[in-house]
Image (cartoon, rainbow, N blue to C red; front, side, top):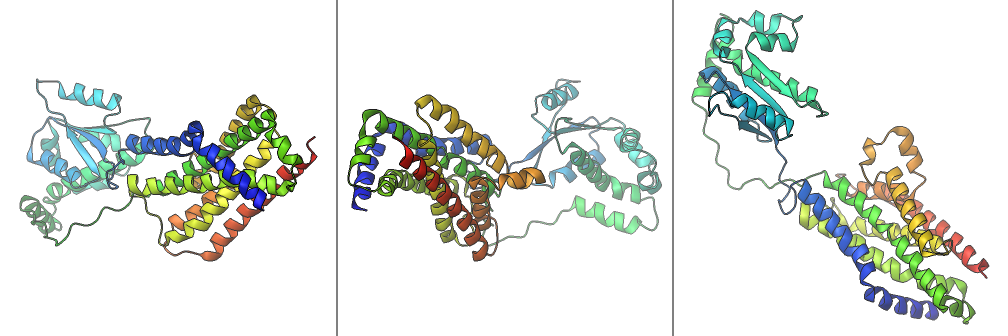
Length: 407
């Protein structure tokens, strides 16, 4: 084992001096996740929520249309962008341009006859005409709603906008119904005289954005397995200069040589993974779960699987071109199958089953069982870690057999 430690010490020194390897293993993943944070508006924001932007055009400028605007503005997660008509006749064009440029997800346009038509409505017009479509009812009220067709949740957006419109005008229409008049009057009075906000001793703390509970582990696992390219190139370099052959002739067992060659990258992988999760915590206020200490065995087992896979690849490839072709393809294909690019919950059932043939998928499930639950199930984590160690053992064994049979 002493020989293995000497090899480890030597390779660690070489790895620290290799700036390209350090950039690929540490700085590149951190920069990638930071860019991801900036692109979603979450970098250094303490987990602030993204706002859904709705455009609003009011050609009526009446008390009723103002109530509709106020109804939409009650939702803190929705930002209402009001398009005014200055100069005259430009509001519709401004709103259409914003919708086309994806600056808003939808546009609500209140026509000039809105209040007049609402005043003519009864509760039967509002709720009794089940055969009329939303488009027909909106047209009858002189309201137009345009939702971005490319938005996947466009149907839900329009349903929300229509529902809140009905809530806004309901008390106005209900004033004509003797049974609902008293309640409608109460709602209208409350809108005219809103209650002051209740003072609180301390502002509520911003909750971590749960999206990063899936994104950070996914990209972390993918970048951890990028280590296999560097390991393979290290073996090729030592094979080319004859160092590897001298090690094989030295009075050191083959297993000790492989352990010594693998340990430096294992240490680097553990540091890399820990650094990425720390970045997720600092940059995105990502939660590390109820008991972050359980991340330690998962990180150790994931790094063991990654470095063992790197060892197996290193004993198969012969040239730097083969490393680029096989190693990079392997990382991207396994990452795509396993769910590193998108949350595993979004994968179809068949893909979920296929992904279980990759160590990436088991690592992702292990991280998920620590980061996204309220109560830690030790048996589940132990199972995932055991599977990762089985992958590591299989990869290392194949690498050892290849190394032993090399001439």
